[in-house]
Image (cartoon, rainbow, N blue to C red; front, side):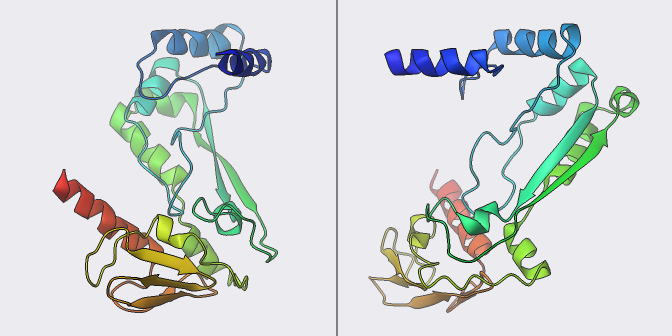
Length: 217
């Protein structure tokens, strides 16, 4: 496909190392090793490999610690806050409110620390350093989302009603979320909490849905 070819051509010429999801690629490790060891270049990686749907850190691959242990180079981490609240994946439209974006960058692991740590310890340190919860960020910074369309699209991730348990019966519009089957309704408040039955947090509702899917599997 010419489009994929052009994308890879541009990415490679800008210094990106191509990684295809859900595939094991030894060439990837070799290319990274050459970049950081032989060429002594800095490397930027997005270890979650996806956008957050519910505003929290997702699962980090266990292989991340193995790779860092293999290369033995210092690690700095960066966590972003505010971008999820401004443009959540289920909304895809900037809210009208002015929300400050914050980036926290810090040295997480030194070369000596990596040498003395196990892979499990490295992974635990990375999880702690990269952890974020956008709902906590809103609360701690007294942020208010006053956009009158702030709940639009929320049913895309909160698709199962916690009251009647019906799937794909949820709808959203304006600042409200409701079930078309049992007619229960929730309001997505300015502080990113929910008014209504069962759940007051988007994250808790999302975790409940995920647990149900695991049971089904």
